[in-house]
Image (cartoon, rainbow, N blue to C red; front, side):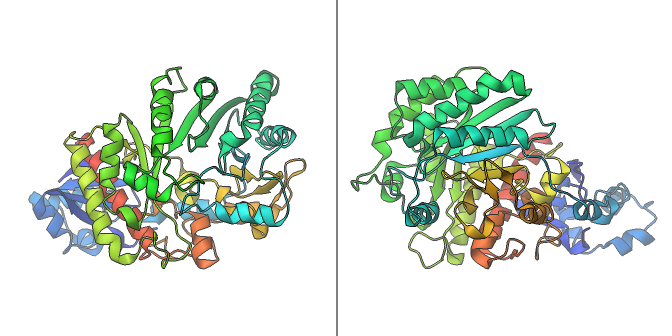
Length: 465
């Protein structure tokens, strides 16, 4: 049994959470608490169904063979290890609210596409009902940058993402915020990393040049094949958007050569309409896009025509396995976002415990200047935290998210994937269960996540072998 050891710092595990799976003729064993990932032979893989920690406590380890090898891994803390060995549950319970690191600026709650699955419809409609402007003013954007600096403590590198709606519809606000931050970096002692997420319709040569000069990362929305994209991402005239953006995307990426400013992802969504989404990844790679993310749709209800339902899972699993085989064999040369995982080090402890930093290191700002825990909570009065001029005055919300981690969520403490997914998306939990701390390990979302993780872990373990 050879080990591609991921000596991660993890924490409490029951022996039932030793996770085993096979993929493409290989056998893998994950010890979640230690973070060890083992590539096993069939004998060791099967034997782990029969041995328990109590067996190893009595075993002398002198017989040699497979039992001896498993015993040595157990003695080294790489099999059946417990979270308590690392004391991270206590660490999680003492976690406090953190200085701000990143803002998501909703510079526009208007959009020039009518995507069928768009989760932003809710906060766009909310703003319209209140008679508010759908676009953020230049002054509000500058105040947001000042808020980020003011609340960042000793952090030096700060991040801001321009989001929507469609942020290019508020281009003056975007450039004003960036220029203001750049002009004051030295005075503030801060460095800014900017990201923009766009549907591409309003891209032109000047915008492409500015984005490639100033944005450390760029996310380009496209759902894959032309037929798939145009079905769910039409313009307001009802016609598809694929042909309107594809050449602009290629031009942006090809001219994105400034050192430190080359990150760029084509980001798509798969729905019940394209359960063969591996074909979309293949098509995006064929079109020359090297970095691709295809995310499952988040639907408010599973009776929506595009919603992913439990009966779709076998097809989805096959798609992830197909992508695993194609990437492993190098027949598909693409950096698939969901298969990126660091088995040697990985994220810091707090990221493993509570994930994205929602409500703490990360906040969202609506066009009005109101603050929310993340972009998915925008315009939800329950999660209104304050405004850019005065900062996040609803401290109870910030403290709430500081204590929202894998040990405070219902099904996470006993799940083998807890240190990889960090409890999943808080906003998704709230949308489904009306509670950020409720998770269901057998939910469609969790099951998809765990399949992606199996493929990602297997792919990267084999690279380290």
